Length: 139
View 1: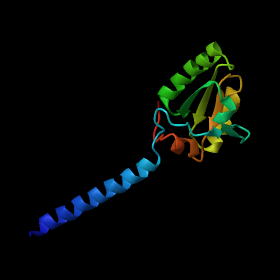
View 2 (view 1 turned 90 degrees about the vertical axis):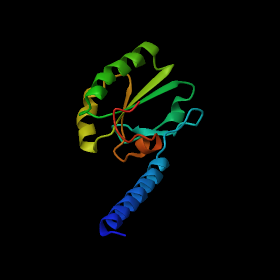
View 3 (view 1 turned 180 degrees about the vertical axis):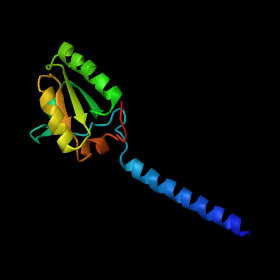
View 4 (view 1 turned 30 degrees about the vertical axis):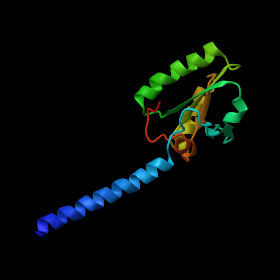
């Protein structure tokens, strides 16, 4: 066996092992499938209160994960607010979940208080992990 082949063999084995390890990590953060019960936690309010989806039982709940630096996300927010206004809070609850750090969320959230949709934060990535979100925009 030539030295070149053994190095390639080692690299190939390392790559295969790494991909298997990543697949195991990714599968632990798999998004719920159709028919699954939605994870209950949907972020935290500006005041730090947990948002529980069970509070919106009987309503359509729309979750959107977003960040201030995400152009498509910023374009989507007014559309989601429009859905919330047209459908009404008695039928639909839109939850816009910011994925940035606490300081960024605390800067932007007060500017969004006039919105009818609920603005949330997920700095600990708990909701993102529960829903299999690993990048944004995420639909």
